[in-house]
Length: 459
Image 1: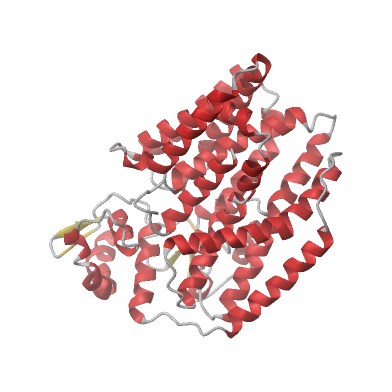
Image 2: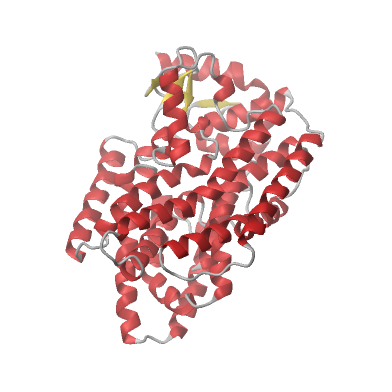
């Protein structure tokens, strides 16, 4: 599953940049849900075949934390250095706060130190004038989305992962009937939040643990199907065929002209059905496993690479940025992940030999210092007023809770937050008449938004 996992991480990358060679991949939302399915499969696998002794759930939780935390901590510290040294605030909301209370500071910092609760930050906002945490609508100009305070924006999903790890030792011991019951309950929660309360486009459906639980549980069921296949000694050729089909779906599913939830359903069902065969065929392939190890650091580090590219005016293409992010990911795996993994495996009673682990960690420290010096000395280009407005528009549209509702008209063209977001990232599927209004729209956005949107939203 290593290649699939890396392609899913690239799907998240493309969501933040541009498609490769016209291939949109499956998109960031579907990719994250697929990661949850794969996580459910792998957790069921290791809990049933590795952590089987009484009380081993404690060791399981500790090792899962050690699996996620080292690379995450590196990304946090390096992000702080870049933000402070380049004197910029790329995707954080800290500089927008006029007042910050101690209780608010704890609510913003503790989840990012512990990993647990980062997903909750997507549900609240901070009033820039009072400094209080609030659940006010994000269209209030005085309110800053909680997600804007994340040091590593993509790490919100780690909060859900950690919560699943807490329940995984219990869930993987449940019967199929019980799992199906919890899956049905999770689907009901998604339906009620989306269909009854109209929260389908916000974090309540896409980032809420009870809504996401169905994906983890379907991964557990997929593992149980894998156990059946393993005992029946199914021909590995089927796994290779399904592997090719799943890669094709990951690359091109967005070309299918259906609504997004339809694509999500197709891909998740395809993943659940083919993953047991694919895992059976590829689990002993060292290259595939090593490629899969790149997915996690790539998922975390790519936004930081994108920001550095913008601030230092490298003007790299999307493909070159992906290559650079992959190179950083390789260094993180070789110099940090593998030495720590060697220690994790020994704690679990398994042998995992890594050549010169302490020297690798020392090399990681040296290379980090060199990179910091290079970034500190490199000339950076501060954003001009136009670029600052582009950034403001991008995050305003991204954080809007109603992405498909027409919020304004510009030159007689109706604009939804989703269309505005595509305009800002220069998406290739934006019609030409919309592309033509991009520059004047950006230049007039502040006054136009105040006149046509904020006033209307306050009536």
